[in-house]
Length: 411
Image (cartoon, rainbow, N blue to C red):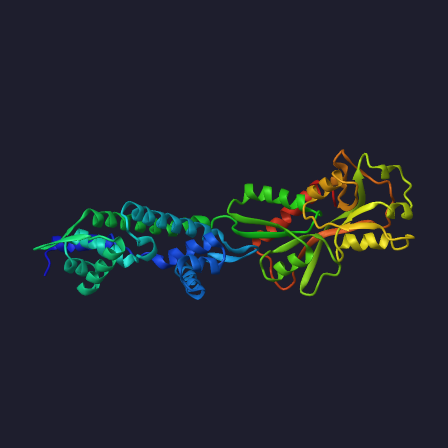
């Protein structure tokens, strides 16, 4: 039997070897997926199958009781909790990689398991494999096997044999300290996750159709970064079909821009305010001298949106009765500023959507053509999935967006 001092010593060793919330394999998987954002690339980086990587990530989420990843526009996005966990995984692996760099040819970052580090640390303190096994509640052969494996990963002996046990070499003491650091980093996870759940968290991913309301999305995001710093904010410019596909796949939460009225099946629309179709050109463009008959306008060079868009349908309807079709060049630009810049740098006339507020701040080098367009109203709003409730973060964004619209006098 052990005396009281030895019993206390083993109790101390057990206290220094806590059960950690994540395994080494789970840490590598979480870090790799957070970094590469696609399962295939993350699995390749770890030399794992995609199914194995997915199993490790699911196991990590089950252990921690939180969702770490969600489908995103350009791959897999971390959640707010995922950001916290990925950061700690990175810190743990940084420490192991630093050990490898200081002890060539060590390969612990790719191969080591916690049982390896725990066995070395315990053996350093207990002085023998048998005493370490007793302290850890394991069989001695299992401890000896772990010591042999980690010595192979380290590429050098860890202990020198002596009559009464094992003498720790410097590399073993460094491994024991590394285990202490790893345990501290992972032991902090629970507290960090608790603090990450205070306040609003989650993701708001907005698809932005060309031109209409893009500045409002950015202004709402700017406010939300101040009031809700734990939110993940994503703004994705794109065409309608591309963004609808992303919406149906759950990669974005809603679309801001011109409404279709009615929307495609499975989607619902929410009106926010109206813009209007406007013809613009450089201030010094000769078109401003007129005449503004349909025949004269059709003779101009036009930059217009592609077929299938509301602005292109309106443009075609306007010139339907012209004696000859207008000279057009389809241009697909997702940034309002870039579309205006194209008009400034070319001989083309453009048809764009403007709100009253934005038209009042029109670039002084641009000028609106003095043409009274028939029913130029353009409904602007949000498109969402009809069968999916909106997360709290998305509702906060919509409320913020509505406040900005009201403040600008658009409704």
